[in-house]
Image (cartoon, rainbow, N blue to C red; front, side, top):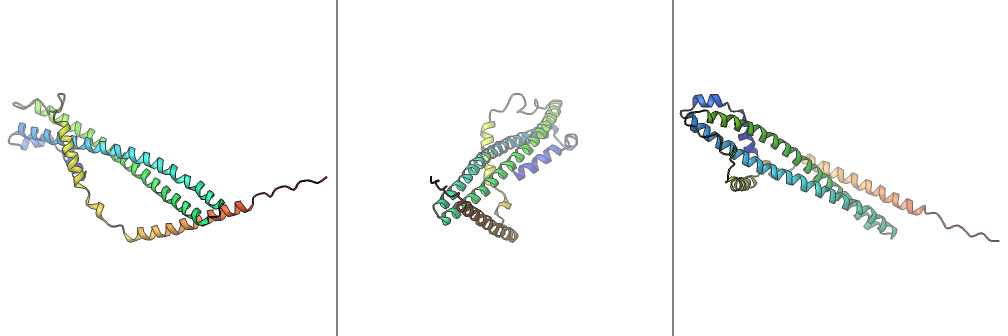
Amino acid sequence: MIHIAVRVRELVSSNVDSMVDRASNPAKMLGNLCTEIEESLIALHGELSQARRRAERCAEQATAVSAQAEEWTAKAKTAMDHKREDLARSALLAREDERARAKSLAAESKQAGEEAREIEAAIGELETKRTEVSARLKSMPGGRQGCASEGTGDSRTDRRLDRIARMERRAGFASGDRAEPAPASVDAEIASLQRDADIAAELAAMKSTKGKQPAAKKRKTK
């Protein structure tokens, strides 16, 4: 995605008039530029589809995991009713893990949605540039009738889209291999200690509630 974004920025900011003035064969140059724009648009549409699917998938998973997380509270109460504090503690820890996972999935869904909106904006800018290049190409003597994908469509689009999408998936990001910095580990450990303290307090509250159950009323004697 990174190298596509860089190339799209270059294409959108290119000065067509200046390129035509410098080219020894302006019609050929504009034709090549049309091809580059079309290839970039196909790649962007592939990235857009992936971003939308990821946003939808993560949102659905976040909802499901969040619902599952809350089921652990009832399970913890059941364990306490049977005087199994160890099981209750494990249930509450599982709940917190699921809550954290749901939060992470929701954040990933939001990020994918923002990425999709950025890609949509880039597609719009690139389509505007394609229209500009196409109009200039049509006006040139010996130039072809604009960019191939305008109006008539491109019968090879699906095959090209699949090919470019596969290339992008294999590319990956160099930053994805970086290890987390030490402060993140410290923060995670502190958060774990706080979580244990919160769970201990919740277990204590469950014990207290159970101990305050109203005693059975004595029957009055005549």
